[in-house]
Length: 375
Image (cartoon, rainbow, N blue to C red; front, side):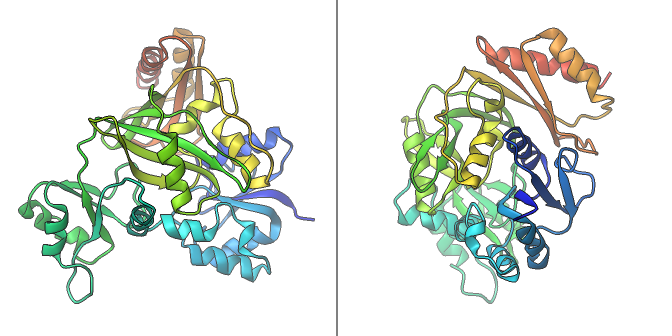
């Protein structure tokens, strides 16, 4: 008998909200994180340790029936080694380490999509001195300008991503890509950005609605119903990496109405936070069901808009902001993540507005939150 039902590698807001979903179903959860006071540690047991080191992972594997993760930046080999050290198989993890290995290197992810003929930007490794990467000139000839360069590992919310419009500009970023670990891909002149939450088990596959995502300074700002259906290509993307579990698939809608996959995240996703209040199963409960091997629910709910709450200069007591938001609209819902430090631009929480005029109501409630929070 294990001490915990589910262990989470990572203790941020995604783990927090997943744990809360599991607790509502009576499950006992544990998180592992390098910080002592984290969003997840405030709602459940938490251990301090590195999530990317096998010996630390093995402790969680020994204590928990099932293991999942909060981000895709953990080396898949450390997961396999951690399970072996705990004398268990890699099937204790969802998503699997092997799917993780197909996703956490963005160049490998692109190759899997290309092999399965899933429409996505053409990607090539950038040239670097003394190694057998594709030559810089060949990369430029294949992709052309403008191009996008991004770190192959890590990087989120637009971090470690640059749009490059000329050879001179590419050279100016040599300190970033010159030592390797970066890729170049085609620039996509998209109409808008979309996201689809995909769930897939051995017996079930489906999606949440296709949502439009609005980015500000490379950080997700708003999420709301898109009025289109990109579920088919999103499912194809998850199948291309042999994924089982819950996945956030980011896409571009092109001017001709077609869709192109941007990136895959093997976990709950910012674009699915609206589902906490839309009246149907949330992405977090679906995630728990998948991890436990339980039947999935069919996602359905009301139109909902999510507005992210980011750290602001001069911010004070967040409770004043919560009060102001719900005083302005009693039918909006505020979710606060409990992060110790509020830095400008950091995701601190979100607001969900459900029903008619949800986009304008979410934006208006957020304005009231910020005004009160920073006054």
